[in-house]
Image (cartoon, rainbow, N blue to C red):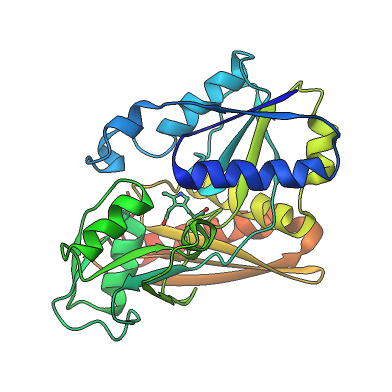
Amino acid sequence: MIRVAGRGSKLSLIQMEIAIKALKEVVKDDFEIKVIRTRGDSEVERPLYELGGKGLFEAEVNRAVLRGEADIAVHSLKDIPAQLSEGLVIAMVTERLDPRDAVVSKVGFGIRELPAGSRVGTSSLRRRGFALAVRRDIEILPTRGNVDTRLRKLYGGEFDALIMAMAGLYRLGVSGYSVVPISLEDMPPAPGQGIIAVVARRDSPLLPYLRRASHAETSAAAAAERAFLEESGAGCHVPLGGVALVDGDRLTFMAGAVGVDGDGKIMVTEESPLHDAEEAGRRAARSIMARAREEGLNLY
Ligand SMILES: NCc1[nH]cc(CCC(=O)O)c1CC(=O)O
């Protein structure tokens, strides 16, 4: 029996099912889902960065693996902070879905079509900064809670639009709303967005299976984006995005930074051979930070 830990949100449960399905291709065993109730789940109304930031829920789920109460934990890769708990590794990823963010509304607006003065919900400083860089005339309002809660607020008229990840909307099968993607150039995604990650103990006997079940191309992108995250110190406090695009044996890393009010946007791209994925991510982080220093963009 393989015990799989994750949060109890609908998206988390779906992600656990996706990871288990991929693992079943290489392991003949039964799987048991263990839902970990986290402190974050009961404090949904406060912005994430007030609660202690990214990684809070993940750390609680990972503790079940560290304590031996579960064999693996399933997360959205983008929710795992640069510094993973001691003793754990990201051992597997599933095939990435569209890494872009999207404008979700009732009436089909893209970021450039939103009427002036639109109230747009997001608590991410990255989404706020890049959205304002394109549209200084919209209003960004904080919102939290799981995807369903946010959609209910959109339906109820509290917002004219939301900015959310394409991948989450797709995996949840959200319908009845218009979803218009925002280009990678307009809004570089959070490192790891659209990728599901499986975490295990460094000494887990499952490691060879997890590695074999991992999606190769996604794994290279994940390595590059984790290296970017580590080198840049990006987290939810920093309006910084970066994504690795894999094309055959080449990898292109596209990264961006912006002020939280939409000023001073910087974009860089770096290329590397696929086997040097991490190097492209690190280089992109270094050139973004050098440019930010030169141009007086305050990222922290
Ligand atoms: N921060 C919440 C979160 N974590 C993962 C996803 C779904 C997208 C993904 O798997 O990367 C979402 C929702 C969102 O950002 O809209």
